[in-house]
Image 1 (cartoon, helix red, strand yellow):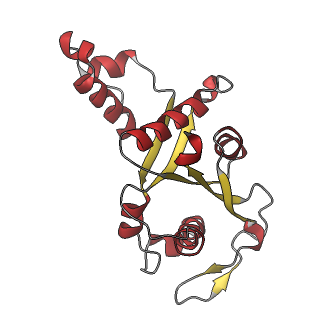
Image 2: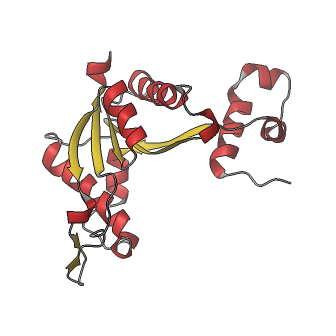
Length: 192
């Protein structure tokens, strides 16, 4: 049997369990997985819950990973310095990751999926904002140009100083010459 990612299996399970026609036709998860193709996916969380679970001040695996440490620091700065209000549950949707299969690029699928997620988060779950961190120019373009997101912080990785716990600091990305890391905030009230 072909192994499927957790995301693919979850999508198939939810589709089978919640789609009236699949329920009526008694379609199984295995049937959906065999006949369907997942072309895009998003992973999102409640930023409040994420921050509760992954406190920036606690030692974590990110203390060994400069990329994780960078994004953890950027979340911490955004929540405590830039956001200007106390974080609450179901207030800020944290869009952790998104991917669209390369053969489906140029079809506006990535943008439509992200807009649908944000509309769902706003209309059904009551979220007021979406928070995104990216180093991808395509992702940045979607959230800023097509979805009216605001760039809250832009970090040139070559100049970012990694402040390691109990180990001094270093410039782990000093030879990095590519896209910056960007924090983006979308205000759902501006999107209505």
